[in-house]
Image 1 (cartoon, helix red, strand yellow):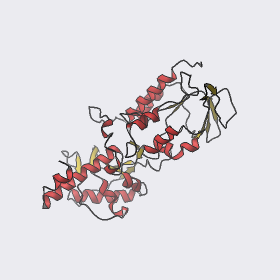
Image 2 (cartoon, rainbow, N blue to C red):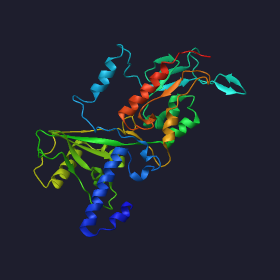
Image 3 (spheres, rainbow, N blue to C red):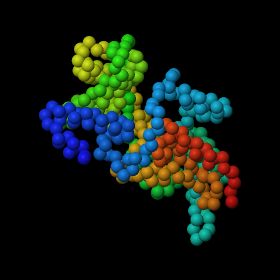
Image 4 (cartoon, rainbow, N blue to C red):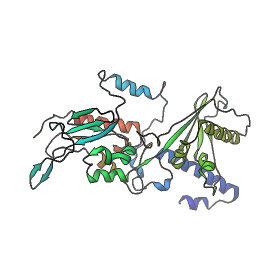
Length: 341
């Protein structure tokens, strides 16, 4: 039985309540998936994502400690910061009638290397192998501008077809805890509305406020509403969220937060969104093709361009562990003997 048929069995307040619960679950799922609406997702590959057992945890001290742990292992000064990549000039040999011909690359400064990386600050780096970890949102916006020559057609088609959604978090910090200690999450159920003015409906995408710490609440918002939140001031978000909490807790004395922190993944030029999902025009195969390395020479055993990041893992896309595992796979390719036939 589909959901529509199920809901039609009920009438009056019972039907309205069940519809609100269903819409609540839809809003929750859009944040998990990363889409604006579940109508944007393709069902044929919906089960390709693998959920790991064990639930979620909060890392004491913050997620940045994971990055610090990994970076501390590396030699000093091996990570260059504040160096935005402007262009990646690369060469690819082409096979025609059994002969291997040198591909074209507009940057001729160093013909002994297959790749020249040009940064916005004017610095240039010469190498033969590159692991590319641009978020899918950046590839969608700037792939044609960054790569010289352009990536192969199949790679550009994957970038275009895969979807990159927007999910933002709203953190509300209070001077003191106010929720009953037995409450871990405040569920919000919304009646449907015909209103289309985003300023009057964006908060309806919030499906709950969960207890993040004793004095911090966390709300998620996805899609168009997540983009709209990025245009609001902290005061506007604080006022709206306070009104919602007072309404659903039936308590006019719920305090205003002393601080509000909102993520802004869409407007961040180094992300252009949050994470990948498989939409109506794409499939798991597009993720696999996006991850496919590119060889300078079809007879080389080591790739010139390798692709990593959450968008390149066929089962763990949208996750940090998917990004991490895709990076390990590329690192293993980098450890292959650097020899040419």
